[in-house]
Length: 236
Ligand SMILES: NC(=O)c1ccc[n+]([C@@H]2O[C@H](COP(=O)([O-])OP(=O)(O)OC[C@H]3O[C@@H](n4cnc5c(N)ncnc54)[C@H](OP(=O)(O)O)[C@@H]3O)[C@@H](O)[C@H]2O)c1
Image (tube, rainbow, N blue to C red; front, side):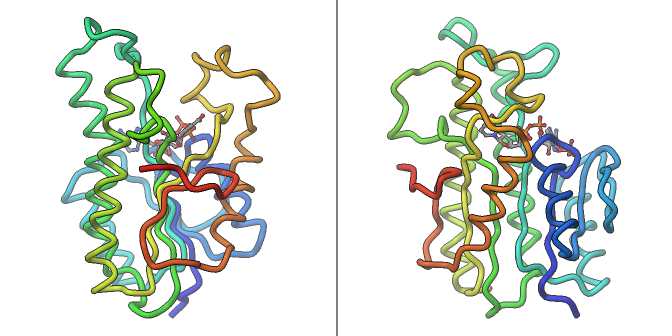
C-alpha cells in the first residue's frame, strides 16, 4: 500500500491543474478528481456531479483500491457564475445565490471532510488542505461586500476547525489546513484582476509552487491552521 500518495480534488481548475502537474513532475503518485478531464498523466476519476452519495462512493472506491494519502488538497470554490456575481451592497443579496455559495464553498468541502477520514493511515503524518480565502477571515473583514463568498469561506473555515477535533481522535496524524493562495490569475479571479496590481498577482504555477512548499514543511502544531501563501497565519 502506497501511503505517500497525493489526492487532488478539483484538478481541472487553475490552481488545481498547476499543482497536479507539479506533483506528477516531482514523481509523486497522484490521484485526481475533477468535473472535466484533467490534463496531467495520473490516475483520475471524473465526478461531474458532487453530492453525499457520489463523494461517498468515490471515497469507497479509493479505499478498496488501497489508496491512503499523505496529502489531500481540495480546491473547490466558486466566486461567480454566469448569472451570479459577488454582492457589492445589501440590495444585491439573493437567497438563491447565497445558497449556491454555501453549497459549493462550504457544503461540498464538508462532505469531503466526512468521507475522507478513512483514507489516511491513522498515525502517519498527513495534511488535508482546503483552498479557503483571506476574505473568509471574520477578523480581517474591513472592506465588506462579497457577502456570499466571504460567509461561505468563513463557514468552510469553521467546518475545518471543528473537524480537526474529531480527526485528532480518529486519525491523529492528520493536520487540517485552510489555505489562502494569494491573488492568482485563474478563471475565478479574471473579472476582478483590475483590483490587484500585476506585480501582486501570482500565476497558477507560482501559486501551486507556494502551496507545495507549505505542504512540505514539517508539521509544527496539532491544531487546524489558517495560513496564506507566504506561510503567515491569518486570523480566523
Ligand atoms: N484565484 C484566486 O485569486 C483565489 C484567491 C483566494 C482563494 N482562491 C480559492 O482557490 C480555489 C481554487 O480556485 P482557482 O483560482 O483555481 O479557480 P478556478 O480555476 O475557477 O477553479 C475552481 C475550482 O473549484 C472547483 N469547483 C467549482 N465549482 C464546483 C462545483 N460546483 N462542484 C465541484 N467543484 C467545483 C473546480 O473543480 P473542477 O476541477 O472539477 O472544475 C476547480 O478546482 C478556490 O477554492 C478559490 O476560492 C482563489
